[in-house]
View 1 (spheres, rainbow, N blue to C red):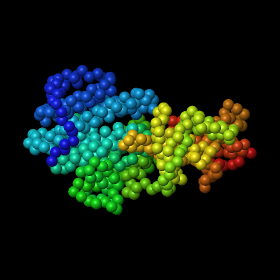
View 2: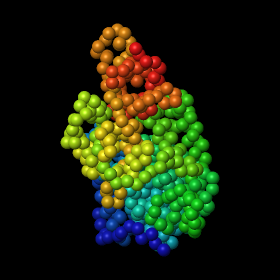
View 3: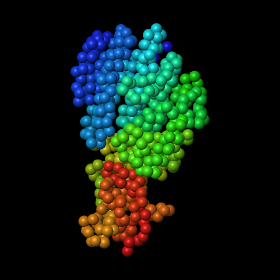
View 4: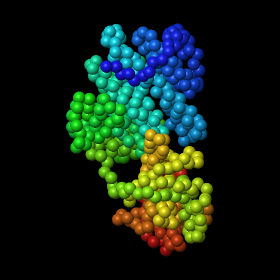
Length: 518
């Protein structure tokens, strides 16, 4: 039985010459990591299409090209994390180079495994490199998953097929738990099984609900815990997901309808779940990332690391995340605008004139709602102007049955097989009320310059703790001070309590309504 995953083609003699390849590598630019990855991807494709190469020579060439791209790939990944500061064209250039490199690298190592599968004699001659080939092929597949998730695209079925067949091959050769140095420059050893489980755990982590920075943190955490994950034939505590090695389908949570089989494997977070919980408790208690988290939180603030780790804990738990309200199928339209400034402008204008028509205002969009619950909407969105569709974006939302503007946050983005984007919107308030906030000290001093910070009130009455929620301009500073709030001519005293969430253009904050101010 052969993998039969990666097509052949006409031989490409120049790439079969190791001396020629070394010259190409030596001529790669030192400071242009995009060009390096783009060129290496092309050369890997040429090697993959070259028939007649001895397996040892094929692996030698791929290893050389892979090594030349290691550092440029790290640099590109770091640069991509600053995508908020990049123009769309730059971001797309980085994404395309990384995604194509991962695809071609996986195909190249995969062809090596294909040849090993069909040639037992060759497998014996290259026995030492066997687990390295499979582990690198699995890691390249995981990278393909990563770059698809960063675009909120579905992971191609062929990726799951490749992962399943690679691991099945490794099991047949008895190399799954053999400890190896996957890359010479890595400090820690690993195994094929750990690489397989990284891909599985990333696959069930629902990264469509994370922004790119959170996805990076989640990917690092998934890799860090690889030795703690559980893998066995039957489901058990801490082993509550399953994957069929023979089918091109993603892993899934074990259900009551689970049917065991020879190619079914059950896996889960195992001991990693308790370790993850300890990390989140430490961050919450000390408001900083603990030293043992190491490079997982490098470059990110503690709130961002905490949110990503909490997301993983929720997805890895024994029981699936509970739906907090019933979702109903519906077909209707939702009027949408985006950003704190635009939502504030729309609500203030509506307060000034109930007859104001926003139907043709700039930035207004019409989205098709597929389902609705008390907590939000599931919608299909058309192509939009600009590049603002991202996790955490603030939305102004207006249903067909309402004239008021509500507030929501974009929480999930998924591209389906037809490239259509489906999103999940968390509804913060059905009606966002424009208010004015004045710092208490400024009022007492008669400082008019400080007497007019606009905000959006999300609560029509205090909750059981006497608190209300507001959206304020990001980095405005008002959330750190006692305030006087003016709502439709009435004045209230506010004491800051909790920052629920901070984003690029807004802070979502809770305040204690402690007294009526005059």
